[in-house]
Length: 130
Image 1 (tube, rainbow, N blue to C red):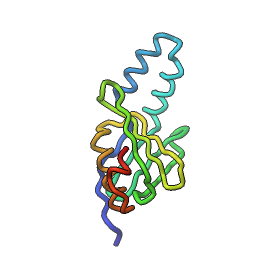
Image 2: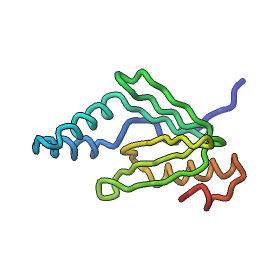
Image 3: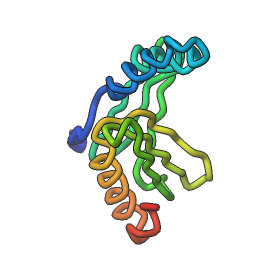
Image 4: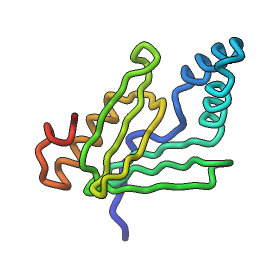
């Protein structure tokens, strides 16, 4: 019998990111941003649980990345869209970075990840949550 995982968030990027970038697409110069937002909306999925962070993305959603909270060294939040959504940058123990772009409820998810990482690593919360 496995350990139960509680799902904190499961879904894609915030729909406001897609709408905002489609509006920018009418200015032709911002077309690459629009294409990026459409690709994110189609194939990027996040799953934040009590045990791990899973990101499914890439072309047609074929790439998957899983990390456990004990691998997290630092997390940073960046508000976007007037604070309705935001980006989270998770720095891992090996120095690599994982970006969670256009996260809905990013403040709550940021707090959850920081608390879980602090519990699992023994590092003070203030050192992880920058």
